[in-house]
Image 1 (spheres, rainbow, N blue to C red):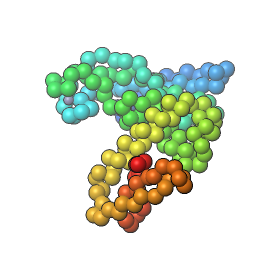
Image 2: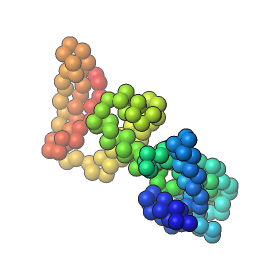
Image 3: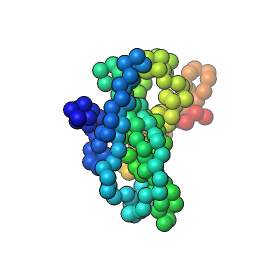
Image 4: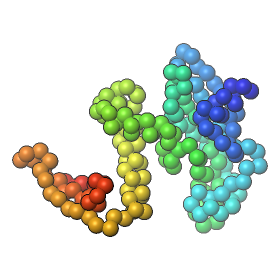
Length: 186
Ligand SMILES: [Zn+2]
């Protein structure tokens, strides 16, 4: 019981989710933390928020930040609901984005490392494939763009410069004050 409470706290698992079991595999250097919803938890459609009846459950796992040098995986039988408007959809989990096999905190760690080191180094150090890193980067870009749409700049500046002398040209669009920019190769 104590282990469950410890993991609940360090992983930030909150109601209606709770830690139901912990499986430690010292040989593999891995710990699996099983989480489930408290019985009777009310289900809602992740797209429209409507209260929905449960449909079934699918086992999913997410890699989380290591705990005590152990590769840490969250495992849950993720409920799917049947929404009158959106059909059968998986419920939203607070620790990860839809479709990702990594928790939001793990993705943030990868993004932080990508600011410090090359993709090759991050791939090697975190034992992640290039595909996995690419997926994490794509989701970060999508989140960034969604945020920018909320904070539309009042003025924009457009500049074009050579990326490497004599090679590609990039177009840089910025908001002119905070340096927020996105580029596209021409
Ligand atoms: Zn819906």
